[in-house]
Length: 112
Image (cartoon, rainbow, N blue to C red):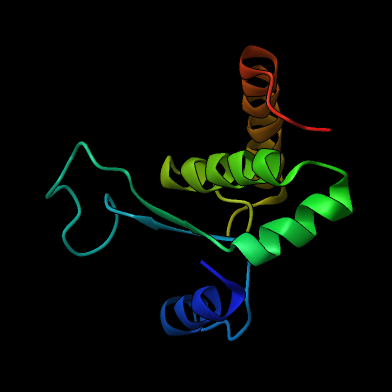
């Protein structure tokens, strides 16, 4: 989606009236949790923000999309860098880097 679309979702569901790069919606939390035990949830990504983020860190657009999908999926698996402790944020970041490195090396992601 674009920045305007993700800003609406961010505003309506997270009360943050600004665009962001990725938002995850867990299916195993809150009301209705467990209705579909095989579904983790949804991950939405702003392609516009991903493009800017990729340029800032020197990654390809495609690689940034993979990274954001991984980031969102880790949130669905219970990792949290925003509401938890510093140790939890560091744990998420370490896992993110570990898995991204594996994906990069396995699938030779375009990170140029």
